[in-house]
Image (tube, rainbow, N blue to C red; front, side, top):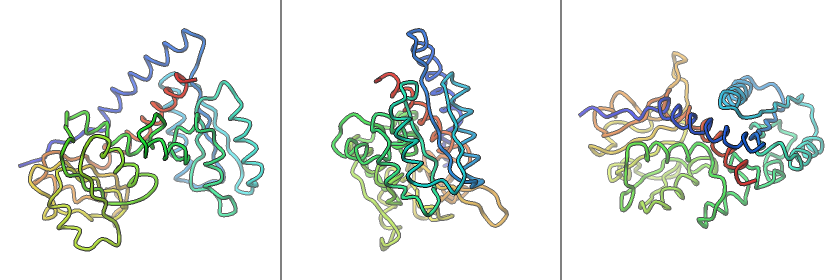
Length: 281
């Protein structure tokens, strides 16, 4: 068996075309969806991410504002900028690129963003909405994973899903989203013993731990769906995920590649959240 690839690039293009169409409909009513991105410091990876997010906005007809600040920016001044953007009616989504410099409390900054503009889905109000099944913004990476499962017509009801990773950004919200679709969910992490015993029971595996080849072919049930969230560099500097793609693709029914899988979906769901924030406003 050779697994079918879940093409994140192709799915992203479909979803972005829909965003463009909906943004155009809002513009006809005099509303241009607006995203403000704040970058503090000169982390090279962050600069690339921010540039890609701003370009994606512009390509879909969204208004974007990029604020670059020196690493010396004080926490007080950053909070003041967020307060001003919260009050700005032309801005529907606010994103503060992480990581922040050590002297700034990232959680305090996230909590300063209005929940109505929290398009990253990191605010405690967003987490609470996801926990209780109320309307809110879902974190973009797990939201993208759910769209990938939806794209292959996969019915999660009664299926056993194993999430490897328990971060607030991917692992925990991923588990909650899967629960909402009536999957039986197991969360595994660095302290889990006998990971293989868990994954061999899984109909769906989401690997989101940031460790190369944590999931190998002998750990996967034939026909399982495997979503690889990992973004790592191997010894040759090549981008790869958490899954041993070559091996696992010979066992799984569906698999997402790295690159070209979850990565493009994350930015796309940011656009979807920004658009929905504008529609709600």
